[in-house]
Length: 455
Image (cartoon, rainbow, N blue to C red; front, side, top):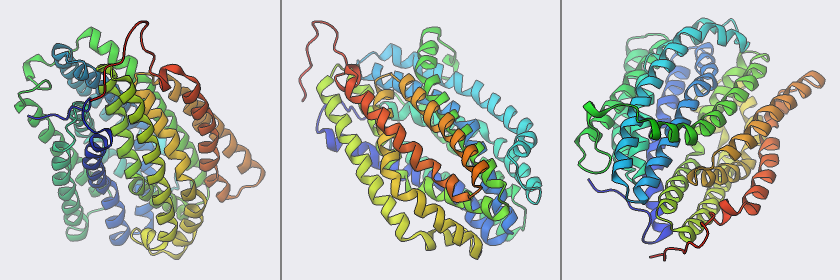
């Protein structure tokens, strides 16, 4: 099975060749959530759409920490692959899979048991609280599939294989849409069936990825009998992944608190915020794909001691992510009405969505800058700094701002402004940190070490 060695050849072609399949993969992955919202919005009541929207940020809060651990595993594998250390790659792969199984069990248990209390704490409107609980619980019945797919995909991507996960995701995404139509449109089931469809599709995509790993004959071959925790590799995964997991979780926590404030404005506000969140995940895909390419590229080239090549790749990735963000932000503003209309034709939802999009989307370029610099740091195995910056600005400051302006003014648009304000503030810190940190900008050569020539 061929892998994509990103330590040689054209930097730009290598990164884009890796990012494009990720983009398409992420595009189909969004169908998991988008299909639920679109079909629920058209076949069921606004309360059902609000129930789906209210679950999104809470799901992200639960899942994001474990995805951070997956990223840590990917960085470890990509560095060892770049360095040509096959034994270390093998141990990291089997440790990652074992960790994913444990994480899946924890996530499923926590998601199912804690659902009602958490939704109540989020000020979820009583009109759709029962539906939100149903949706959330059925979603987490398939949490093992979600975790194992992301774990397996991360392993393949760490060695430059971004195409196979794409093929599996396309299949499972189409299956998810068909099941949504079957359960809701044909059989007339409730909002819970949309989550059931997603869970089924997630499990199938995980099975396909794991089967591929078992059949491979390269560094990332998975042997079921060898799945276990290797202490050294596990510690490295924790060291690299926990900061990213915490970073993701604090962002999720902040968004949950934001949603709790939005929910206080009623069902229309909840439905609007949910529709916007689904769409934002869709339009921001090019930036997400580039950032994932940055992390893998930096990891492989640092493992191979290709320092100058890593620096050039970082600069290209940051510029490309910001350019893509500027374009998608403009398009989102221009076509906001037909885009939100996909989810709901409720006039109140459409009107409030226009306000939210006009407030946030023009500032996507600042969000892209923060994420791309964070991706460089993660690829270099330095994930603590992005975690602290985002914890301080995207969580503590954002929450403090929202609680203050809601107490003083009580205007929902001021909640929307929390995002561009905190993005810009974090960018000031990120850029200063990036430019002044030799180990980020220069990747800290060891004393007396020479660069490997770029090929």
